[in-house]
Image (tube, rainbow over all chains, first blue to last red; front, side, top):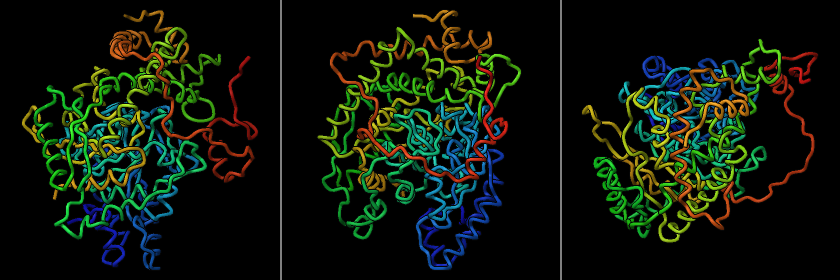
Length: 489
Length: 95
């Protein structure tokens, strides 16, 4: 087995026992990137020199007896999170030459923990999309079938973990952008509760739902990364003060690993919402989810049918609130102070229009237009205000459900990865990709996508599909405990 | 419902976006179909339902309004991303 294929847990054991060095581990990942990324295009930038220097520093810390969980562990980061001294493009031409002057809080925390930043990953421009085809720097290919998309918007980060280019990666999830690509690429993708992880240094898209989270090869690894990046931050007023739990210890304690004869999920009630399993759901996807439910039952969980009646309104609400917040958040890209500037205009208004017209790609323009429209005089009440009221009803749906059950089980996506170009001219079809993932985002709930097996595609290939678990706010520990049961092998 | 060309041009003006003729032609039916889809919300009864703008559960997060030193090098690197004149960020003529 090559070192880059290890989980964080396995690599950590080998690092602290001195069996391997962080340098060797880092070199192994860099070699894999060089070998595979010309076909996959998961990465937008690699910082080899800095990574090797950081690895040597981690090796020195290991020699001194330090044993941190992420010390010496290499990772990649979605290119919408600020990394000091490195370009942060957000997948957009408007930021083609933008060098972040500071590190995001999550990067700072990972640096302190001794994790090794290898580079930045591809994404839909400004995280607007569900396929990574909207990147101004070309699409990322799914490592399991290069003709297919990796999902999005954090498609580069998902593909990088699937292709074993790093031990984990960071993504951001606004309405499914971690969970859906995790489903398409067959990896673990965790969206923490809204406010659990600082977003200082994350380029804002939809401030009321944006969250940073990890892609990993196992639920346990996701717990290790979450524990490191979570917590209150004075630089992000939306972070919550609740204590960060030792998710990894909670997962492995209480007979989770040591005593196989007990039922680790005994008494845990898991909801099966009928609105996520409508008759038109692909029967292969349904079969994988039934198997997931059976696995959870075998571990002692009780599966209970529930109803989330406002589910069908989650995507419409999301595609009003999101473009609205985007049109406001992206107003800062005015060509002054940083980023692209189209200098031929004489008049200030024309300068703004030309800069933004040239710097933004089609989907960004579409969303800015849509947001401006629904917020404009005469439409605000009919669209934005109404969407915020229906958001309340969606929230109440989840509150009622969690009075009856501890967790909710759903498919992550209605189908496996589609072909590159297949939905490129139909923005509405692309929005409907988010049908199972926007609910948890609008309600700020923690949710995880776990690989649930393979389903056959129209051309007879087998591609992965994810099972999504959703938990009440800040219940990441119980979410991860159940997620671990869904791991194959 | 369908958005007219004039409306598209007006929204682009409000959004400070220069759109080509081709873009206007392309966006028009796309925005129509998206608006028709999100229009399904009109069928939901929302009388007396409070609006949700945030889900953090936090209320009024205050801090003291005080000037704090920021790393000098980071400040300079931030400023250097744009056009400078005599150490000041240069903006366009407004009047």
